[in-house]
Length: 226
DNA sequence: TCTAATCTCATCACGTTCTACGTGATGAGCGCATTAGA
Image (tube, helix red, strand yellow):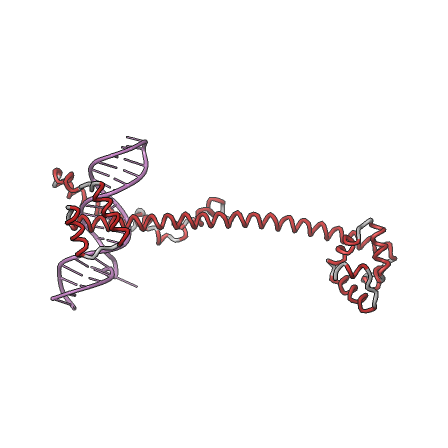
């Protein structure tokens, strides 16, 4: 038996599909951890060597450049080399910078899409859970009603059996004629429909009705169901 | 088939706005990335 928290965890994509969430690859003891450490060492080594160049390395694009690149990205997700060179020339950037901008833009666009998709799936999942709750509540109510009806039916059947002097089946008991139905209505102060419902749920009584029909005793009782 | 160019991915580092976030830049690729051209 899982706790609610464990059930919740199972619903998380990172738990269900760990291969889709490579962050976990950097867990202690994994190859990802070693790779990460190696990269950090290299980067520190590189940045220690050229302190003055560090600031020059990171060149923030101005608004115009960023807007132009954004427009280009909307038109085409990937750039052919000539177009890249042209863009770089127009914006006064290195082609490498333009290439890098597009690489970063693609990566961030992709992760945004994944995030949006996740939100949609999450919302859909939540609504299904709510709907399921409603259905379960409805089922519970119906079961209760069924139990009540069954109980009432058995009471009625018992009382009818006593009043009619015994007999186990409708065809051989007090319910063998249409007048017995009227008696039932009187005795239990039921409306016709209610009395009929008590029998209608009984498969045996359906057979009994068929029997009545066959013998031409089709009165108000049968009319209610036809 | 080889190789240079390019890609994706994970990550770092810096600048900007409130200690997190956006973004430019870097390096690896391990069943050794893929792709296109010589």
